[in-house]
Amino acid sequence: MSSSHPEIYLVRHGQTEWSLSGRHTGRTDIPLTLAGEEAARKVAGRLPAIDFAAVWSSPSQRAKSTSALAGFGETRVIKEDLAEWDYGAYEGVTTKEILVQRPGWQLFRDGCPNGETAADVGARADRIISQLRDVNGSALIFSSAHFLRVFAARWLDLPPQGGANFVLDTTSISVLGYEHDLSEPVIRRWNQV
Image (cartoon, rainbow, N blue to C red):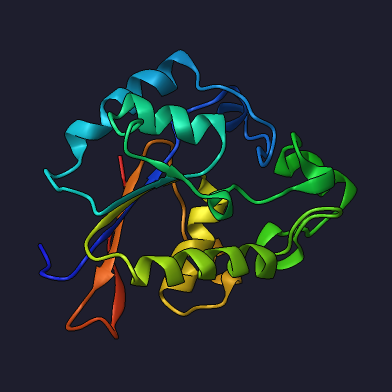
């Protein structure tokens, strides 16, 4: 179903060694795997032929590489607020390893020691949403899973913790938009791979 209203296309970066192994990758800047690069090259063919009014990327190497390999490297603008969740003490650690030390831990509820809480990430998402409301047209965003999940929750005016209810695969494409008018934000498509 297409819409006459602006749409926000969200692309999660391609596979990295850490996304493959389930390690929390916030601010560690690691490259895409060969499979991640190949999947990133296919992103452009999976997007509709739209002249995006804005193309924004996280500052991470994995998001910038995905945008470049998808053909948007020349037009993208780096937005610091699109950075992945800062995992602090849990950077590079898997959820399974965290749960051994901290049974019952949940990222979206508990946040990370010396890192961000869901509210911190939600504040960054809110700033991006505010900027998007000023864009005259559709936008394309390249970022990481946990940030984009919080972003989707905030788009729907849910608390940032609501991002726990969404899942994103590498190089997935999701589309946010509106239903009847600009006062009704919706998820139009989610986690398309």
